[in-house]
Length: 389
Image (cartoon, rainbow, N blue to C red; front, side, top):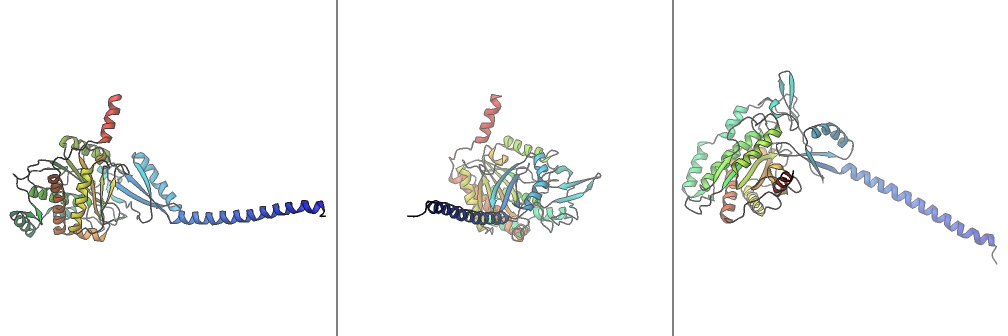
């Protein structure tokens, strides 16, 4: 018969061995999990999409490590002061932007070209030698003349195509054919002291958007004379108001004044993406049809990078979500990308691009003559709130 003391020691030993093994296992698991978490934290990038007062989305990429803390410290105050909204999504391939363009000292005060500062403090056409975008005093008059001019051969080709009933291969509708009268408002991004983005060799976004808008208006009127095409600006007009918020308000008021059936805002990417990105309302199938055809036509015009569509329930944009029209914002290429820049500089490519966009608009209208008008849900809610006050 076993000694009682021996029988008592056995379960105690088993318990001690179990506790020891459990402790070793817990330490091993905790150490492994901590290393995995640290690794993921180091490699994962967080992309904050910050909506500037002019309504254009700006992607700011930063890691979840020390760099992110530094970025937050430098950007936090400006975001708060300008009352911007930030929406964060995970991404492993977004590249950091936020190149600051500094203008020369005006009136003893140094103004900084950034979407966080007053656009009227910008000295038009001159960027500081220390600008992080490395733009050395781009010659605006020369750039504007290049963007606004169309060679004689281009005009001859366009006139010849129109005479044959086509415009760069796209059909031309006679005034009496399918007379569906619609109003198209094209919002030309930036302008005046608001330069937008810029390439290293001096190509400026405000000139690119104006060049494309003027060409688009011409091709729309050629392909479908029944359409009433209105531009928010037809020259390098000064930004409306003394701040980007006032400029945005003016553009919203322009929407109310024109009351278009379709609205298209033109921009270039602020990062180095070559894709065409469309921002539309999620409850507007007519605009989805339109942007799908636009993407197809842009690919045929030379913009071969796959396009993508983002809805305003994910990324709210006031000029789109508050529009009482079939509205879309198009970010076409990037001035930071050599591939996109080559296309922007080629006059013939830009003519084809404008004709492609015009065909998408004209075709969508002709194929959907009974499409209901779009009524902004966001605006309806705002009106209900205001009426209840």
